[in-house]
Image (tube, rainbow over all chains, first blue to last red; front, side, top):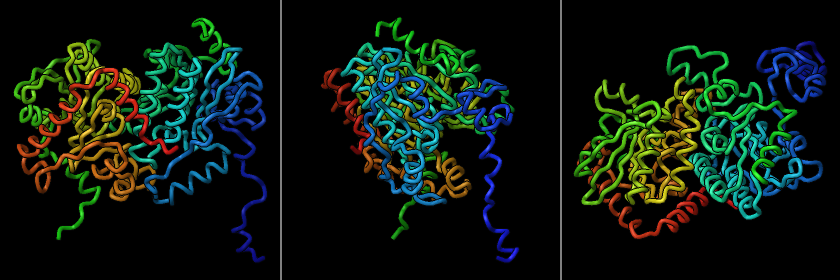
Amino acid sequence: MAWFEAKAEKPKIPPAKALWAICPKCKSHFEKSVWKGANCICPKCNYHGRLSARERIAQIADDGTFSEVFRVVSYSDHLEFHDATGPYKEKVEATIAKTGETESVVMGVCEIGGHAAMLGVMDFSFMGGSLGTGTGERIARACEQAIAERRPLVLFSASGGARMHEGILSLMQMAKTSAAIARLKEAGLPYISVLTDPTTGGVSASYAMLGDINITEPRALIGFAGRRVIENTIHQKLPLDFQSAEYLEKHGFIDRIVERGNLKKFIAKMLNYWGF
Amino acid sequence: MAKKKTAMDCVKLARDPKRPHLKDFIRLICSDFEELHGDRLVNDDRALIGGFATIDGVKALVLGHNKGETVEENMEANFGMANPDGYRKAMRLAKLAEKFHLPVVTFVDTPGAYPGREAEERGQAEAIAKSLEFFSRLATPVVVVVTGEGGSGGALAIAVGDRVLMMENAVYSVISPEGCAGILWRDGKKAPEAAEALKITAHDLKGLGAVDEIIKEPAGGAQKNHELAAANVKKAVLKALASLKEVPADELLEKRYAKLRALGNFY
């Protein structure tokens, strides 16, 4: 091989980011094993990093109790959407192959500290946790099954908002999920919403903000519009902690910021207070 | 033969400053209108206004995004981009309509909910979410008319109802074509492509089931003839109100839920 061909070869040594975890909030570097060992919580700044849906379920559901539902409900390419980088269908199929999930929320029945519940967990690595028709359908079905079985609903959100690739019907999932949650609440059942990093756009502006209680983890990003959009609109720099969990709690939109290690206990305790 | 109208042509028509806006529709459709102000919490949002009105003898609550006509009004009304206070006022007024068994008619015409610092601090996300939940359970008929720009969550917040009507050249979308092009095309100038791909015209939305009925506009667009445009809207609104008048409240809510439930259920 000539020297100029060798240049184009991919390096055999993995790039630095494969070995290091960088805290997205304080930019501190850690060995990946340290980051994972700390449950993806930054040892420096206490930012609670993102977990996959499966990791979260393992931490919240009692061992061996989680039974997944609605897995067959998946994305829909009714618009045959195509952007500059190719067809939506190819992107979402690649995501399915990579993550092993078939939608951005994993739903199932389980027990949490001995309390029967319907548990949903969004996975940010699935199309940015975007709210597609399949996501909305799973949540609506979860509410209906929760009503039928008298189960409380616990829903972990992590999302950039509605899924543009599914057009107006993705927007309509905001209305559909909110309507289903309204009925769940009217049936006297609890809904605990856990807004994890990040919960923004159409997801924060629908089911994520509708919990009987809204809880979150330290330093999570929660908001409606993006920071850059706001700064460009108002021509002002926003404070550093703008749209942080702590900022939202201060402004009255979050009931409690709960450390990851205490979440399960906290949820079970609330369900216990409420007699479920 | 005229060239086929593109999605971006509709975007331009929907945003045309000469297009009839909320105050034109109120003036041309209602025989009287009494505005009521404030969310009873912090503010009176001028971007979303409402009050009791009479439409051809039918009493109703009319709510809508207000873009304003003059530059001063545009500024005061924030170009129809509501703050949380606007959505909370809408809920307060709609609750009054329910209490007195009057229907609600909403007019949707907004680029989107306002992306501002105070909007976030006062809970823009929570206000929209609450509004979606609230209108899904409001026990009185709700007729929605998308008259111009149906801009994402800020539009949807007052667009959950029993009948969704949409003017022929209005658009309604999960994101603005420019916003979508900026993210998925990495180039805001690709807005026409994004507009096409997103399927945001009245015809596309009717095909997807997001809209029940399309209201014809005068040739060339509603801006050419406000009176005729408003007359068509009035006729469609009255027809929708008449069809909902005798429906008992619990049946109304079941049907409204079934309608939302059917959106994007492919299983």
